[in-house]
Length: 253
Image (cartoon, rainbow, N blue to C red; front, side, top):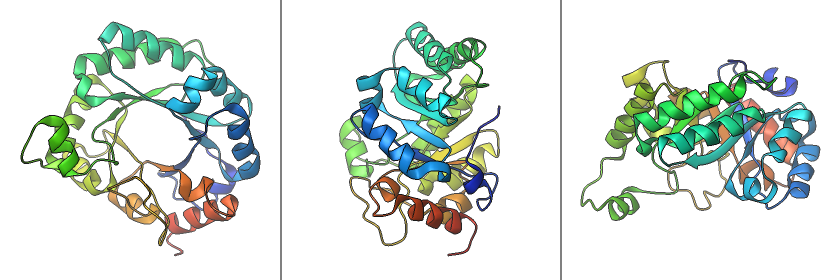
């Protein structure tokens, strides 16, 4: 599977780690403004629920036409046949990555993988990897315990358990916080790629995230992809922020 990143980032970032900027905005105009401002400093973007709900799969096609790779973060969770059809449709529009909830089970994950393969076969962008979301980085152990009805929660153990479902279902990787990355890497080596959200530059605000990490720390923990949100899009100079990310990944800061 081939993933496209910008030449500017590739020149300084370790080859195994790809930064992805989140387009967590309400409409296409706002997304286009971010893409235009970042220019060649970013070649991979995330389209989440808000933007996808507003603009539909056409926003994925637009980004592909602009020469960008696209991670569609829909966190699908439904019966296998429905997820298979959704994954097929998303992949058909050129997405390189798509998320499902790992808690949907290995059969659902396998259906997503099959649907993505079917959709990608008709697209010119190559394959579409399925990533299983383990535990949202906005949640801590107390929040997870409340949601799951548990008095005690071992976040790392549950992340590794859910990663096992993704591996069984044939997924390309998982979404987890950097704090669980080392345990997942120990259990699955390179067989699962790790996408780590909640990335913050040193000294920046954690916002609504609970388990955050710097780009360098996430890379050292084994990340293959990093999600950069307000650390870049909310910066006074987003291009400079991307340069800081690249320098951090290169070990310069």
